[in-house]
Length: 469
Image (cartoon, rainbow, N blue to C red; front, side, top):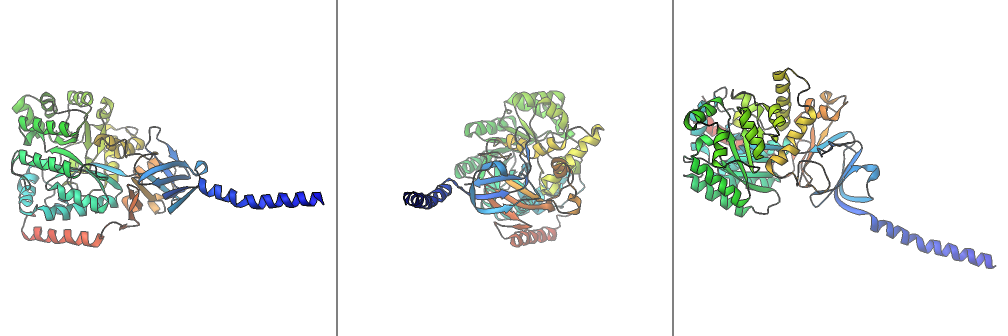
């Protein structure tokens, strides 16, 4: 009888404890906003980690876990995205663009830079660049960039408050700079007025989750020495990036040497307008001394190979820049001189140019170009602690590629596959700040058809005004 009582008591305790065990398990289960379950992850971290059958957990816009599914904590997610058989990598970072110039795509092709600018682009800008049209062009550019996997872009143009608004509304990360030139622009009559606009932008967007501001003097040849120094002082005072075109053409360099006895880079150094806060776009024609200066000053380069090729500006010495210690990132330039904003295509082109130019297939690997398009871009913009790689604590700015297209089959090396085989059309998801903004060919944060139609109507107006040669 005693044995029966003891057995009954044991069973009762077990039954009583069972709900408590289940309750404890529930308490230990972590809750996340999103889970990316099962894909191959290209992290762009310091070790260039590639994780097979990986898992990414996202909470409040940031990466809370990245690694093998086997090592993951017990979790529940509000949304789980099945990424088995897919490739996950950081979003592309476009470090040099003029987003609203999508309105002038194909306006005057096959012309040298100065003729293209002076005879066609600048007259068209004078007639059509206003706040409303800038926002229409920016929305089109953002749609195009998101569709290509870009999650951050660095912009220089006019009425940039409209570009910032478009980026914020469509959920895009952006660094925004009001173009500063010595002559009147559509948004400012003087450089001083443009700098006042820059200060206003910095005050308006301070602390915003997606939008940052830069100081954006156009170039050494479109500003006086005093104006360049004033721009640099403003950037240093406000702790902002300084974004400027430098040594894009041989003509620009020759003109600088003739007028100042210095290359554009040497002149900027003599004015104190270089440093870790400076991002120089193009840099197609740098001397060895220019490269040493840039490396010593910690200034970065935004490489735009397709625009430089199309305008006949030349081919930048990217391997030499990297060997010198310069941070090199990638940019598309504006759609009027490219003519698209596909950063993956930019990396495709840039990588193959250097291999052919140097007659060396091993020069700058797929891994090198992958980093140029991701973490090096973040470094160039000074945001590498926040984005550019898939690491715990960083913002969840991600892209997911489907691997089922004929040109994506089979896959032996995920890294070379991404850089040499995949296309923007393979992109299935884009996530910015933890929020999906693109899914299977559709923008999730705005009316895709409306954005395209608005820009098409502007194009018809431009065509009717005979700006097209």
